[in-house]
Image (cartoon, rainbow, N blue to C red):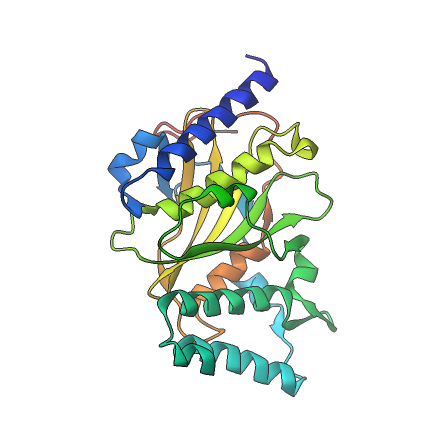
Amino acid sequence: MTKTASKEHCLNMLETQYNILQEWPTPSIKKADLRIIRSEVFEDSDSRVPTLFQPWSLKQLLSFKFDSSDPKVVNDVAISYESIDHGSYTLQKNRFPLYARLKVILECFISEVQAWPRESLDETHTLSFYTGWKFLELYTPKIKLDMRCGIDWECHGGWVKHGGEHPHIKAAMHTAIDIHDADELLISELLVILGIMIERMKDESLKNHIVIPVMLFSLVGPRHGRILTAYFDEQNLVVKKTPLQYFPASPDSVAMREFLRYQAGGINLSLDTTRLPKPVKGVSVSI
């Protein structure tokens, strides 16, 4: 099969998966049912699955210290995190709905990356300045316009590498759904991942790439989050996930630092996105 034919086959498979999920009767899908949509899920630490992205170490992240020299910025950070617990005045009047709390957490995460200053080597910049990721502030996959309405969920912006030659993308979303089984994937998570892949596979500037690595920062009810990374191997949608973590109202929480480590990290340049990887079948794979 030619590369063009393989890419067309992958695109058709992704669109089929997407259409099936559009009609899925429940907000989540059990691990045992993933085979129905030709998908596999692995823990993030599973070495059988190729590493698409390379998160920073905690030590590397902490070397970029928050610049507390501006009292206005310090106050902004304090108010932002306090709002996770208590909400703004407007949100309090509306009884601080669940989705609003998740959006506040997401706003704190994006501000940590894009707005609040950090110091390194006697210079002060935002974290995004140091990482090489370009922020797409209003990004949401266009295919999302076709997604079913109902339970509140939404994609909120994304990041691509500067220069535009790499297909890798990171995105953030929230959904007002509690996850009761950590092995389950939410339909909304899968729809966002598939929507991104489909859109980028159709992008003429990425026509030479057949693999679209996606990292999704997913915030779920009541105030938890996890990170999903995914790619399609021509047979299955392969998803890796980190454990669910609770988000307290603190910039120094394990959960927020985990999100920032993964957001700041780079891509695995040894993974050739112009050809398909070997399917993961219970043994270590090379790519």
